[in-house]
Every structure is written in structure tokens, then in C-alpha cells.
Length: 383
Image 1 (cartoon, helix red, strand yellow):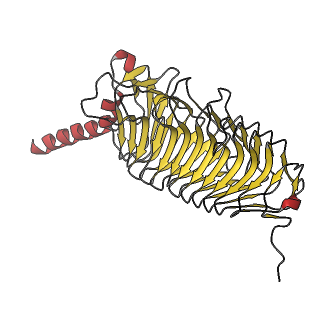
Image 2: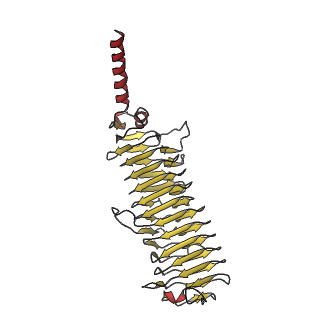
């Protein structure tokens, strides 16, 4: 009898474990089911796929999972609840997890919360694919995480940045759109603050700072995904509210291995607004891949002990300075075919008395120059 009881108890325990580790449940939030409750009952160490249906009005936590996939059916949405008694920072939070994929979901938040989606706690191999956010901050990646963002669509209604990379996090962005409504908020598309972003095929529209890199952060434009729809990154500003297409500051870097196309950037008064602003010991490595057109401010302005290197890029139709070097800064232009085009600007080349532009022979179509420290070649005469 004791042996039989033990077998029955063991069978019940096994059945319970199997039920809690169901590898492919469907959560129908329109029928009153809860995605968060389902995840809380699942095994975190076995690969599993959860299908999400309907509108889930709840804060969802994915913590400690290895091999989880969340697939949203058409119309599947995570909606921020009206109250937040536990002071959640994100509608969807992925923490201390690895090999997690989220696809086909829309995440909606309001101004009372920090961000729609947060990825933190050293999470690795996290992939958001065909995901849309509408509301606050968009997607925030922090605490040394590794994340792929594929065809994400961020509508930044509140907060500061559409996609953020902090704390040495590494974010790969493939295709997608970052945009904002017509309001008075001062916002950024990409914010890399001590993080690293690799990007291709993204469009960033009507952000005051389309790409903001600071705190020793870096952004690389590279053709790294052959399945991407496009390689170029497009920064366009039809509303005319942009201040900088890209701002690179405080020991940071912007490196262009594929085309960065910036149009209608900056403001009419000029100053340090414009296509690309490199500041405070930072670097721009553009090669032939920077295309700036119709900037209302400057084209490329390099300031405060910073450096920019070009070879075959194009800066044209700029209202103020095409290439501008000030405050102990340098711009170098290497030889390539075709040459770097700097034309049709208010002033094509400008440098102050403590700065230098080198490689004037490698620049074509220049007509207006205000730079006493202009070297014809890449260097002064070498020994």
C-alpha cells in the first residue's frame, strides 16, 4: 500500500511539473487570461513558446528565463494599467534572461511610467522583432545587456528617447522607424550613453536630436545583416524642429561603414545646430558615407578638442558652415575618387585660429573659405 501511494504521489507530482512547464500555451487576454500569471507558472529553464492574443492590460515581467519566445497574434497588445501600485518602470520588463524573443506585439504606455519596454540585469541574446511601442521612452536597454531590435516601430509620445543603450549595453538595430507626434517635447531618436549601438536600415524622423551619443558611447553604421531590407540610415526632418542630426559628445564616437543621410537638420540661427555636431574630445569617422543636404544650421561642426575624418562624403546646401572646426579641433579629408563634395553652403570651410582643416586638395566644389589653418594635403611636409 505504501508503495502504491508513493507511485501515485510521484505521478501526481510529475503531472504537476509537466503542466507548469507546458511548452506552448496560448494566452487569450480578451477572455480574461493573464500573460504575467502564465509566465509565473512556467519552467524558466526549458525552451517554450507563448502565443499572446488580444489586449493584455497588465505589467509583464520576464525574469530569469532561458529560451522563451513570446509571439503576438495580429492585434496583440500589452497595455499599461490605469494604476501602478508596485511602481513598475516598464510595461514589459525583461530582466536577467537569455535567448528571449518577442515578436508581433504592440506595447502602449503613458507619461506616468518611465518606458514601454525595459531590458536589464545582464540579459543576453534578447530579440525584439516586429514590435511596436507607443508612449513613453520606447525601448531602454541597460546593465550590460545584449539585444537585437529588428523592424521595431517606436512612436515617442512622452519621455526623451526612442531607443536607449546604457551601462555598456550592446544593441543591434536592423530596419525600423523612430518618430514622434507634433508636440513641443525635446526628444532624441537613439541615445547611446556609455552603450554601443550597431545600426543599419533605420529611419529617424522629426527628432530634435536624431542620434545622441555621450558618456564614451559609440554608434557604428555597418552592413551586418544580409537579410535587412536596407543598409542606409535616414534622418529626415520634415517638421523643421530638428537641432542635430547626430550629436557626438564627451569622448564618444560615430563611425560610418554605410550611408548616413541627413536632410533639413539644424535651426536657422546656426550656432552648433546642424547635421553632425562633434564635441568635447569626440570623433567622427565618416569616410565616403556621410550625406548632408539642406541643413538649416551647420553641416559638420567639430568643437572642443574633437576630430572628424572624411573621404568622399558630401555636404551641400547648408545655410551656415559646411565643414566647421573650432576650439582646438581638426577635420581631415583623405583622398578618394570621387572627392569629398562641399558645395553651395553659406561658408564651405570655416576654422578658427586654434583649429585646422587638412586635405583641401581632396575637397571639390568649394567656393567660400574662411580658414587660415587650411592645409592642402593630409599633412604638413613630412621629413
